Length: 351
Image (cartoon, one colour):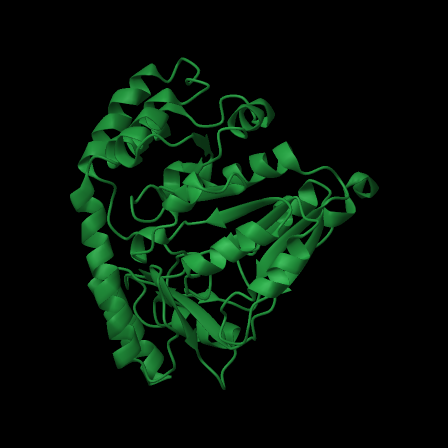
């Protein structure tokens, strides 16, 4: 019966980071430094936890289909923008693809980047066109505009995963003014960058900005994504969306998390300090980053080799071998707690 499976799923798929587990060598009870998945090492805000506990008492009822508690909180936090929500950033991307892309149409993706953009496009039957970045991982705006002339959606991550660099606002404007479809700007890591793309929403009707509660707000396990969208798009997005996708517990926790500015600020401070520390202390080149992770060039080693060696020493980092267009000598390292970061520096330098 395997013949019934669509060809795009007979191989490939999303490549997950190495999971936490006991180190292969050393003490079996050694704590594992989890620096592979760009997670916030701090537990959720107490406000978010309290809101989730209260909301679960009503879990016998279906959630609000419009997620009004979260949308209202987003408006209170950011202003009178138009919002949509999804199960993580992935859910927003999937629904946007479903809303706009017919089979056979084009989706252009700035690479190397988060592989799910291409997977979501393939799932919709789109022709996915990778548009390589320059050697320094900056966006080749000319090439992206040319690829995006006939594309329904152009996917651009800034700060970019896994390279960490952000794209200047002026380059985003060039893309918006040159393409024929919608630009999806993935801002999952924007809080760590100091860059603000939101003013562009007032000028361009082909811009969608996606964000998440997984990183700065410590809610990766609750899977909450959202997007700023032009007003014309919202009713169609809601029509295309799967019913009741965002659960009431996650929505309540996310809404409450927005009220705890100190929680987010603490991790942003931690990230800023450790990005510099990694750059100064590591004996391998560290690329400049605007995100809560850094990309490290571990040549002459391969990325998989270093990931396996570090895992035996109780440190989990991400191999970048699976990122299309990225050479096989880079690892991506999240910024965790002090002890995790210190162990990583010590163990990588010891290789």
